[in-house]
Length: 173
Image 1 (spheres, rainbow, N blue to C red):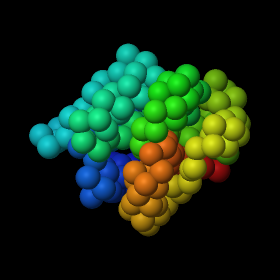
Image 2 (image 1 turned 90 degrees about the horizontal axis):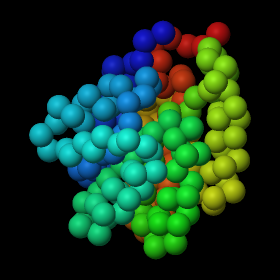
Image 3 (image 1 turned 30 degrees about the vertical axis):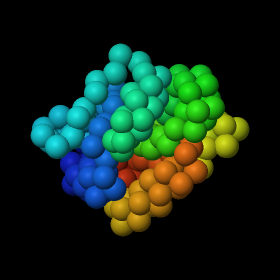
């Protein structure tokens, strides 16, 4: 089950269309092609993180400098970032576009991913972070535009959940 290079390119192109010029990320299986695309793009700054919560501060600094940014993280990274999201992005009204690999759902083969998958949406709801699932390539650009618009207008974090059907070449059985 390889990660879809074609769909990763669609996601990356949508980020560029939305004016994203800085991306923060940790290495993660589903995000590998997105990170590589950002790294190879001379018009995009890629900040490699040691832990996901650092991305909240990086995005806050980018916002204050007038640069649109996005965080790429796994849903376990979202859980690890909640302090920074609440105490920085929400408190100080920082627009934060998060693209979250939505691990742990139907078709997940790794038991260590299942618990995080089960709590991702309830955590987003508890934090009052608007989110949508990206399940097919035709959803990517329109939903990303709407998410970026909402983040900028509300000065709040928003999340797009990168689902298995979008990120993998073959469908889960």
